Image 1: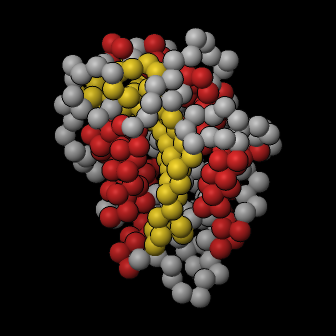
Image 2: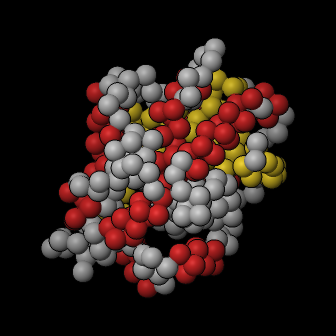
Amino acid sequence: MRGHLAADALSPRARMLCDAMTAGFPGPGDLRALRAAVASGSGREGPAVASVSDAVADGVPVRIYDPAPGRAGRPLVVYLHGGGWVMCGLDTHDATCRSLALAAGAVVVSADYRLAPEHPWPAAPDDALTVLLWARERARALGCDPGRVVLAGDSSGGNLAAVTALRAPELVAGQVLFYPPLDARMDSASVETYAEGYFHTAAHMAWYWDAYGGDPEHPHVSPLRARDLSGLPPALIVLADCDPLRDEGLAYARRLAGAGADCTLQLHPGVFHGFLGLPLPAGAAALRAAGSWVAGVEGRHPPTSRA
């Protein structure tokens, strides 16, 4: 079943990819099979980057991508990978981070945060905050402006980026959220419309939330539940039209704008959740646009954090 649409909303190319991916992807609940599936698909080669190195950020493994070593004053992106908080890592998102670093002319620090259910909430957001603090302290050594640190992430990583911006808004110059889950209650219309038939199912998302843990009403679990979004840094929210999470992203964009935040929304028609890393024109366009947005982020130089 493909939701409740009379006609398929995906482009022909997206539909072909969606069906092929769905056929080889395990259902929710089998963690070992899910992790094996994403690991087997992590070999996509990304573009060459001048410098790629691994490090440890106060206990959290990270990978650092520098497209032009020696330059100063550049943005610094802390990237948080997707995977329902239960799977994926540095290798699965290597190509995306390479592409973003080149598109933005920025250093990208990709965080290998702890995964649920072995490490339930708040392990992942605590690791994300740790990497943000570590990266900001080393920004000048990396040739970056410590006032131009941007949080970015896809899917569950987008949730972590939004949560980290809520926790430490003074330390963040921008946030890039690719199709993030933002409300554990999952009560938006798009959850029903795209529940099945568009790769990322409502059943998978519900299982990811359960495995992740935490109070669904807590703003550091469900950022859309936060009472006050004022004072947050500028945001770029990138959504897929055929995605159970679409309406959460739209609602968050409205709330950010209503709270006075500078929010740019990009809604890509004819594609499904996860399109950023797929061989689709929309994925390449979204990465280029995100790179341009990051390159234009202005610096914030607060004295302290209230995280």
